[in-house]
Length: 231
Image (tube, rainbow, N blue to C red; front, side):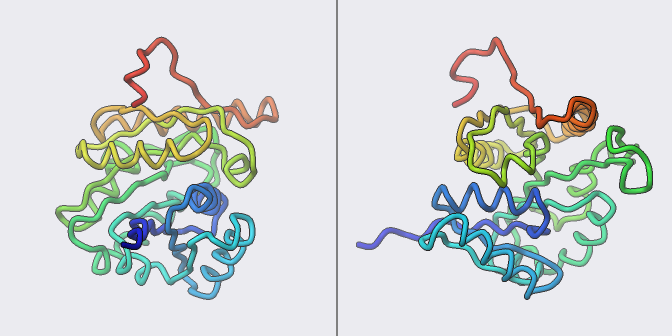
């Protein structure tokens, strides 16, 4: 009996640095990746670039965002905050019932001419909570992958960073943690309910400020927890 193909992961807004980096790492780990973009041709070009880096055996394709949603029930959103709400409203009819949306969006002030090291106030509490209000009923929203350096993701080295995962759906948390652990050296932690995403977003802004100031690619590590916390 032939081995079943991996569950496809649609990376929406996947032609940006963060989306490309996550897609590359997961493609190298054997996952099946669909790059989503507003422009199908641009998505296909990005998929070709990832396949070139990940190897000929990599399963990577490119589709327009709504077609990517229709082709997968595991979605990863990697767009700037200023485009998040508009895109999710456009994609709502295409998002399949029972899907999981992993949102890495951070409400940075840079999107409206402010500083990248400061977050905007979001009425719902966080960008992830805003996403939860915009997706169809029954779709699980997860906040994760905010603190991984896009530049490091697009490289070849292991990444010294923990990924904190927040959601109201325990099964979606576990699936996301499994995906995070496929990135070399990354550990994944259950960060509790989706409402805690606001803290993740604030930490991201702090990290951006530190990295700008010290010209680095710093992440976070949580210390002092028992080994089972990372399983």
